[in-house]
Figure 1: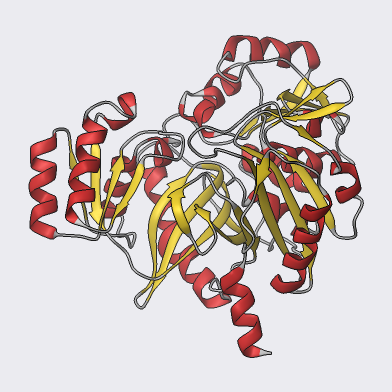
Figure 2: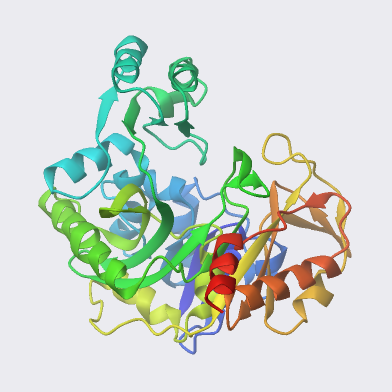
Length: 427
C-alpha cells in the first residue's frame, strides 16, 4: 500500500522511519519532508495547507492512507476533505481537532463531562480578564485560545506577569489565536505526557513521556517547543495510566461522540500529576514533538496496522507492545533559538553519530546543500538513544552529541535529570 505522510519535522522523520519498516508498505511519500525522510522515503514538494493539491496527489499515486503529523492541517480540516474524496486519514476531523484548536472548547468539554482539570474562565476582552486575575492571584496560567505555535501559554508566577500576558495577547501578539483568552488555575505537581490511540469509539493506551520545555539547564529560561524528552515517564505508573484512561481519555471520547465529533487519531494528554491524582493541562490532536522521537523507538510492533485501524474505526482491545527499554532524546538547536535561530551553519558528523550503538538521529530543521548538511530551523536535530535505564540512554545520547561537529548549535546537557536522580536514589 502507498502512504502519504504530511509534515517536515523530527516527529515526521520518526513516523516515517517506523512506517518504512512495515511489510504492508509499498511506497512512502512525505510532504514536504526533510533530508532525514529523503533517505527512507520520497519527499514531495506539497504544501500541507494546499488541500486541493494533496488530494490530487492522492488520486495520482493511489494513496491508501494519509498520516498527518502537525496540528495546523488537522485544525484546518484536511482529514474531512481527504475522507470526502475517499482517502482514509490518520487524525481527527476539523470538529474533533478543536481539542487542540481551542483551549476554551477543551475546558468546556472537561466541565460538561467531569474530566479533572484546573478551574478556569474564558474572556474576550482585557479588563474582565484582569479582574479575574486580581481576584484569584498568582501563580496563574494565561492561554491564548487558538493555535500559537506552542507559544500561547504563559505560566505567570506573579500578578504583574499575568496582567502583562493579558495585554500582550489582546494586543494581537498571537493574531486571531489570542482573540479569546483562557485563564486557569495553576496546577502543582509533576508534568507528564500520555498518548492514546482512538478510533471514534475505543481508545488504546500507547505510551508516556516527559519533556523539557525550558531552553536552559535546570529548567531555566523561556519555554520552547521542547528541548528533549524521555519515555516512559516514571510518574506514569500502571495505576496512574489506568486512571488517565478511565477518568480523562474515555470520558473525552464519550463527550466528543455526544457532540457529534467522534475523535479518531492520537490523543495527546498533557497531565499534571499531583496529590489528588492526574489532572488535564491540555490536549493536543497529534503526536508530540519531541515525544514521538522517544516513543516510537520503543514500539515493538508494526505501526501501520495501528494507524489504519484508527482511521477505519476498528481498533483492537489488546495492549500496544512496547520494548522494556527507555529512550531519551536531546534536541540540538540552532544558536539564538527560541527567539531568533541562526540558519545556514554546516553540521558534520551526523552519520558517524547515527552509527553508534542504540542511537538514532532524527532531522527536524535541516536542509541539504549538495554534500553539506545545513541548519534550517530552530530545533535542528533530535539525538535519540535507547538504554536499559534513563541514565544509560542519557549517556549514549550525549556521547552521540559529542561526535557531531556543529559550531552553530547548542543543547541542554541535563535532559532526564530528574529521572536520573531518582535512579541514583534507588540504586
